[in-house]
Image (tube, rainbow, N blue to C red):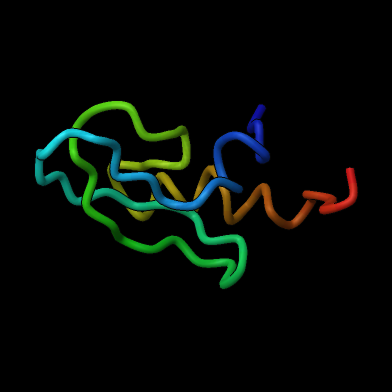
Length: 69
């Protein structure tokens, strides 16, 4: 099961490292997966290697997510 609050709600967090890894994150305000640059360490769980993985995890789960829960 998807932990929407953990995997899809936080904003993109590149972390403190200096890598250059294009990743995807789910933006709850636009209901879209968006690209960002991940530094390679730390960050949060709202980070996906592909747009498809992001969409599958968050876009589908957002349909049943209750903002008041």
